[in-house]
Every structure is written in structure tokens, then in C-alpha cells.
Picture 1: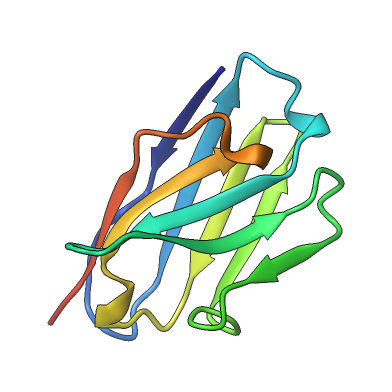
Picture 2: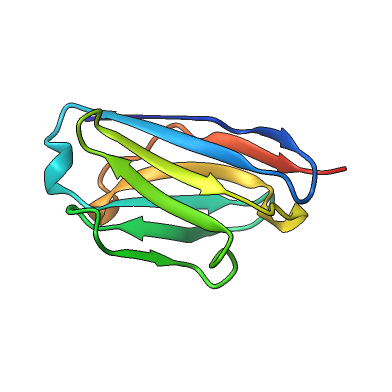
Length: 113
């Protein structure tokens, strides 16, 4: 099982980024997927989840209305569209499988002017 995160970077407040996660080594279409983040000096925070069908999503209150999770099962990919980014969104972002049995290596998002 392998998850590879990408798409992070430095962005100004109010800006946007799209994170990607490429999955391999398992049947992607059978599992829900998550995005989780860890801000500097803080613990892990669940950000969003999508079910295996892609028709049900949930978001942490802190990102609701700004972030959108999606998946492309044909490409075994998971996405997180992040709009109106705030400095508090600065963190290392990980994709993870349902049950948190597998994690990506993380991609850094820094929101700063």
C-alpha cells in the first residue's frame, strides 16, 4: 500500500491550493479516504473524509465551506481543493485510508503574507 501526497506550497492568505494523493497497492475503490493535518507544535487534526462511493463527504468545522474533497477512481487519486486559505491552515497535510491504516508522506502547506 502506498499513498503519495503532493500539491502543497507557500500561498498568501485568501489564496488557493489543490492537494493530490496517488494511491497504489490496494483496491482504491473499496475504501473511504481522509485528509488529516498537523500544524507546527500541535497534534493531528482530521480535515475531511469521503466515502468509497464518493457520494458522501464530511469536513471539520474549521474548513467547512472553504475546502472540497473529491476522488477520481479511474486514476486512483484523492484531492483536496483548498480555497480562501488562512494562516491557521498552515500544516503538514496527509492523505490516509479508511481506518488510518496507511498514510501518505505529507505535503507542506504554508499560508503567509
